[in-house]
Image (cartoon, rainbow, N blue to C red; front, side, top):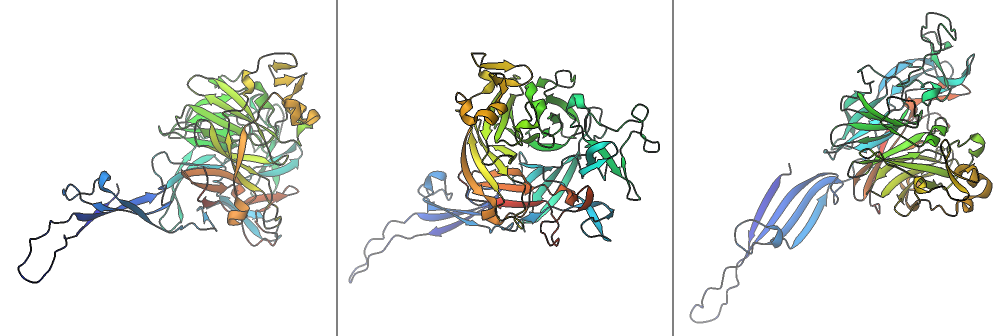
Length: 514
């Protein structure tokens, strides 16, 4: 609750003085009142809090400055305590017994950490935000069972953290919510089987002696395709997008299915949306073509409209629809799902550069959103690194689901809308965007360049927290401070000199035209 302090000042009527007899007394003047009201973090006028100062004359002489009596309002705002260097999130150490491939002979830290896949506001507390991890520390690796990922903490449970901005700008971890199956058991970040969106990545584990072996159901026994197969998890999640609803529940989108999974306040799965018709866990299906997402570039961003009825997911990059032949394109799909009616719509977004990443989205209204568009460069080694925010509007964009079969245009059950037998991705590959002449993409308006604004040093700008009507906080994915070169694990550094370890860092950007 805001504290209020009232200061009363009395202004007396002027008296007339002259020689001779005293004149009549003048009328008493009005009292001048001043209200001082503390405003909290996130206020539209004072992002970091401060004091609202109202002044005016007490026209009705009741000793209270009413709204109609306020003649002037000013603000004394607290300073930005986060600053251009941002505020790092706290972390613990998961492992520190693996040799740093970047510095032979030294060990490195796998950190938890990892809270940067997305961030969203707390529904009721303006100074708090939720942040999401992905599947856990991992790195590209090729072993005896094919190309996949090393999982040095193979039983890691993806989770949601609740954080709070302190008065001095520090970030404090308030609570962790571990994600669980419907029966309450903890999930992992391991891949799903191929029928449910598995990427085909083989999981590998790093043993205590530093050796790498394929991860299998019984690690005490050798791998056997039938009797001791590769360990997968059909509830495994590589979370990348998140919304927090006012009822305390969460929706999380991921890169495997892609899946959109509903969790209760304790982290238990209660619902699921994906593109797999045979998945009996699902209440609503996405269009089938979403199963053709590119591995590790699935549904990177997730938002919900202000009425909390419609989920809005954005894919990270061009989908492999129908194959990797369309990889080097700038066509990205947005999907909306009304969770009450089950209705689904689809729209197209055009990137500034091919193979960029759309790695976050937040709703401003039912049709307007802010999206992240970025490359994967570090500013310290590439001055052209691109980390942009755009405002987009879907209100005049073409809903792909609304187009009926006519002439060249046909809705294919597996590939979505096609033109002369080509997917939309193939049309752009072969004919350019002019080949989609009847389809209008979403409009986009540039908002801010984070490199120019704060010298943004991280490669992965991934989450946004809408603080107020002109202020957004952003966060990076630090990959649990874990990296790899040619399959060898190492510390993740921001600079070529390997002096600064990447860390989840919050930056607050003010004065945006939202």
